[in-house]
Structures are given as C-alpha cells and as structure tokens.
Image (spheres, each protein chain N blue to C red):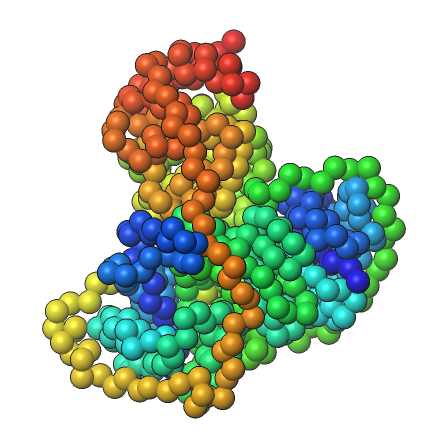
Length: 311
Length: 249
C-alpha cells in the first residue's frame, strides 16, 4: 500500500509546505505519491517530481480544479483513495479546508495538525493552543492526516519521479470561484521564513505598525507577522496572524515587538529557534519564552535596533 | 429561511489549562467554561442575518452533557430562537461523530444555512464544518470573513494563506467562521432572563441513530516541552551582539 500526499501549490510553483509534509509522509514508511490538483499546474507537478523519495506524481489538470475548491478536490482524492492507506496534506488553509471532507466521505476520523509520527498509526498533535500534547492512535483503515509544516524539515530535492495524469471527477457546481485578493509581497512567506518580525497591539495603529515593523523586517530580510490583538485592532491583515487561530511558525529567529505574549500567540511561535522580545512591560509573559529580552519602549528600541544592524 | 448554528462548550479562552500529572488529560475540575469563541461569532452572524430580514429563525444546537444546555442558553440570550441539546455523557465526542449527529438534526430541521466555528479552542481539530458539508453533500466555505446572502446563494469571502478569496455557494450550505467576520454581542440581563423561557429540546445520539464510538484512542496527554529561561539585554547594540553570537543574523 502507499501514501497519497496532496501538494500545496499555486499551479505555477510548488509551495515549500509540500516538501515539509513529504518528510512526514515518508516517515509513515510506505511509498509516497504526490497529487497536484489544479489548472495548468504542470510546472508545480514538475517541481514535485524533483523531490527526493517520491514514487510518482499524479497530475489532475482541470477547469473544475482551478482555485482548488473543496468539493471537486475532495471528490478527486476520493476517486484515488482505494489505492492508498494514508492520505496526507500540509495543514495549510487549503489542506485544512479539503481533508476533513475527504475523511468524512471515507468515514474515518482525521488526525489534524500532527507534529510527530510515533508509529504509522500513532501520532502527536497539540491541543489547547499547544498547552498540551495529545498522543493518539487511529483505529481507522485509512489514515487521513494534516501535518503541521513547522514541525518537519523540507524533504530535499534530487528525485526524478514520473508524472501521470489523472482525470478530475465531474464538477457538480455546488460552489463557484468569484475572485481573490492576494497580498503581493516581495517578502519571504510567513510560514517558511527564516526570520520573522511580528508586531502587537502596542504599535497603536496600522500606520505605526508599518512605520516601525517594516524597516526592521527589511534589515533582517524577514517576513512580517502580527499578534491576534494587532489583527483584531486592524493594524495588520489576518493572513499575517501568528498564533493558535492563525499561522504556526518555527523560524530561526522570531522578533516579537510590542507583543505581550498571550497563550494563543505563544502557541504559534514558541518552537522558534531563537526568540527576541521587545516590550516595555518587564512582566509581559512573552519574556518567559524569549531567549533575549529587551525591556524598552519599542518606538525608540526598534529604530535603535535597525541602526545597530547596519553593517 | 432557517439558520442552524452548532455551538460547543469549552474551557474559557482566558484560562491557562493544566495538564494532569499522570498524563490522562487536562484538569477540568472547577475550571471556567464558556461558549467557544468561534461559535459566538457564528451565532452573531446568524442573528445579524435574521435582524436584517434574511432569516426567519435561528436554532442553536450543542452536543454534550447537561451543562452544554448552559452554552445553548448563552446562544438564546444572544438572540437565537430555540435550542436543541444532543445529550450524551460520553467523555469524548469526535468531530466525525458530531458531524453525523448534526446531519441527523439537520434532517429533521431542514435549515438553509449552517454557520459554525472553524475550530474549537480545546481540541483544535478544525474538522466539523467540512465533515458536515461532506456528509450532507453540501458546498462549504471555511474561514469566512464576510457573508452575503442573495437569492438561493451565499457569497462568502474566506481567509486563505496569502490573502482572501470569495466563493459563491448554492444553498443549502455550510459556512465556518473566522475571527474577522464580526464582533459578537454580549447578552443583556433582560435577554438572559428571557432566554430561560425559550424552548430548549433534548435528544440523544441513540434517538438520532448515530454511533459515536471514538475512532481515535488517546494514549496520553503531556505537557509540551518547556523553553529554557532566557536573558535580558540592556540595549539594542547588545542584542545585535547576542544575535550574532547565536549565529541567527
């Protein structure tokens, strides 16, 4: 038997989340095939074929799969499911959208957001915003799994898998794509960035958020993140939210600026390699997880840091 | 048009939970409980649709023990019309079982729209809405930040990695809520009193003919690994020095 991994991609290129989820999929011990579903997504399929350890790449190219709506993608996976005893996807917004639909149609319980594979049927996953780790064993015949991408390193390239085309199932037109509003940014992507600078409510306004955080992110070549409080207050977009209800990240360096460190934020970043906290409140809980804490007013400390970083 | 809103009773979002030392679970004795925050957003959205003339009735449903009726009363105090408790004393009810129970309730109630939270802040599964849509054969829009109803359809803007996208769903449909959809109201005291008189029906997994036996076996529940305590630095320049030493810049 084998494992089917649903690729995260935008048709033109393969997202690094796929390579990370592949590492987890390979740990299950069976051969792994990657499914690339989309429209004009051969470039993404070709990139998937170069990942080391891939059996074959299944390419489903169809109008119905453009924008990867949940109903047609789930139907496609279901049409392939008989050949697989595990179906895996990265826990991206797309993977989280589609996979429970597949699990329900297979009448199995999904294993969400796993962080460790203990055995092919036993997994660790965080619950209560990462304040507890649950070890669960699945009794279901097919394992349907989403993988926390920050918990697994990307699989290397060096493979040369074959690409087979597979047919999409009929679109039953329950939903239609109307439009998308994607932020265009030259910055590294939040979920795979090596360095992240995040701002919190202490920034005070959307203008100040941009004015203070951007230069620091520029000088560190970092992605920008935000606490839920900053997102709620409208200082930053929700796609920048780091935390239990946003993205979970584990960069080499995480700089928290004006973030107090609520449980739900810590859940999203506490596995970062090095954490820096800048906050004027010495009692802020963020200092309990920070490797380096700077107790200072962020409006003077951050410009000083930008200055000190200049070569 | 009827809107059904499933809600879950969870540990209050502000409580720092404690893992039991013997690894058997999380200590819930004398812990403050509340409606899951994403469920509150779902109730609020349904009420706003009704208040704008877009729906005739809002029904809240919960699966759980006797105490889950308190969570339903919260929904009724916010303004929902009636509640249904699927009563069970099962220690663990998994999302797949909840989706099956909701499907059975929906078979009786025939709502045009189901709005529910994207995830519960206890088990963090993020599954129930998608599973329910699948079992019903309905379209879904998860992680909604905007919901507009039109004739026989719903236009939903969803939070996705890198931005937002908008889908049009044929009704009936399932929508799961994200944070920015709305800001839920507080129930006023008169409304809390009024909610006590609103109808609250009870049913059970047995009456609905659903097997809720868990598929996952929980082997243990541990505390996460702790981070070692760090140090305070005195200045930006000292911080840069430390980061260079650590090799991260």
